Image (tube, rainbow, N blue to C red):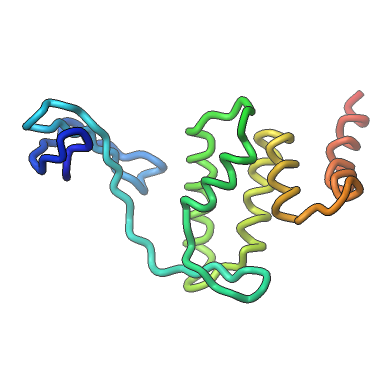
Length: 155
């Protein structure tokens, strides 16, 4: 592993531990050349799972693409990056357990919205507005009705 600072390929592992429910190994490393410490993550290489989009096209499953969408929805909200990582790990595990070669983008969107709904309702609405392609204010009202109904019942 090359050091991110000096780019030398001479390091030693200081610490290894499992994370993300045992699906990832986190390794702390120290460069033998410059002494800098850095962290690497080792994940299982997943089979080439494809995402079937609304228009029928297929593209490789990308954890990073899901992360980007979640981070945009959660921007300026009190949500930690660890919480986003937990959602991503959950989604990845669900997809791996339920599907062999292909997963529909609708499944991914719905499961992400379900997780966001319980985490932060503002992030949920932001994500839903893009995922469900809101065109006007009425689309927002339809998504907010269930949340507003629950609030009124609790008063």
